[in-house]
Length: 247
Image (cartoon, rainbow, N blue to C red; front, side, top):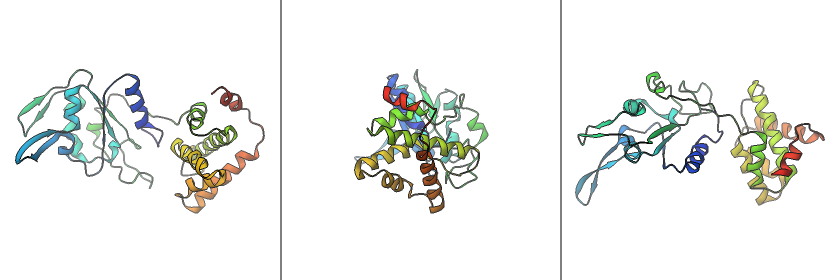
């Protein structure tokens, strides 16, 4: 659980590396029990039962990724037994569905189930404690290391000096965010957006500004000041110049 650090992508890559089937379902405030479990649908004049993502994953022994779980309402309490790897009784079909070997539930969230006291994650709910207790492992995912971010950006841009500046800039912003000096972060996703902008517009500052325009003017100017201060330094002791040459 953390702020825009590639949580969903990490699960996708883990499943790909382990050759596991992944079923991804995006949770919203309007997600119902029927959305999760299944419902009857009208097909060719007949009412037919259609499994939802939970039952599909259970039957296949797949990994079920419930993305943005903290957007959910109490409707997800229907998964209490499922989260304990117990069978699920489908009331509408009078069937007991047993989890196939390998069935796993992973959920991602930007909060820890206590809601969001700020305006960053609109819609995040205070979640039922009994539901949260059924997740055996909770991982706080940090931003990628500087070397990892260099590798990611290098796939989209060949300007090493620009990439180095962006990675150092993001670190400075995140360090200041941690101590409360600024109330927003630059994510890896936004760094990728910036280098993609650069590929299109061939102008570094325009590429950055276009990616920062979603922020209010005061915050955007603060970010730009950080960027200027990073580029004003001519010598760094972080060894990233050598690291990027090896990528």
